[in-house]
Image (cartoon, rainbow, N blue to C red; front, side, top):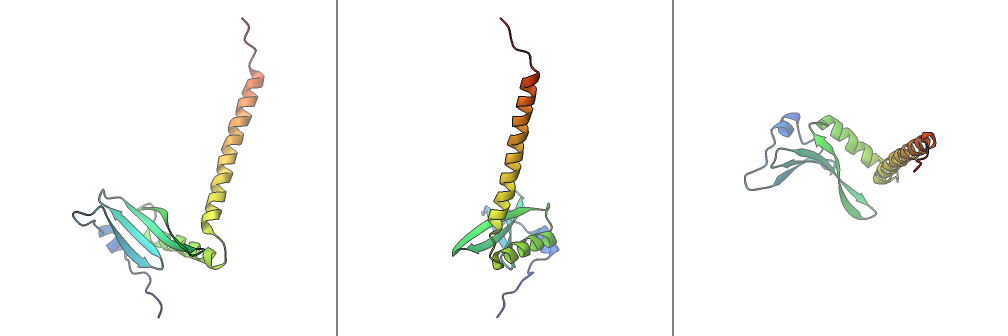
Length: 123
């Protein structure tokens, strides 16, 4: 029997409150997607992945920045990548590595371009 999906509604998500005495509450949407609502009022979308036999929890972003519909789409994309044999976490890290290298290259070129235009200091 298939597990139920799309258990949350926009109304449930918007009105979710953390119970008194707890630091957070986790609401399941099914399909490995969860909403973590914190005592301070913040909320995050979380996906549970099983990768090489290891269960991992990863944040997809915050609510309300990402709506319920967007969170479902992101979770679906992650799960499709896993089913096709790709590691979605590696792809995400690879993109970050490229951005970091581009930033370092900009600093490096700026520094040397500026250095060549400076006149030497004489005492």
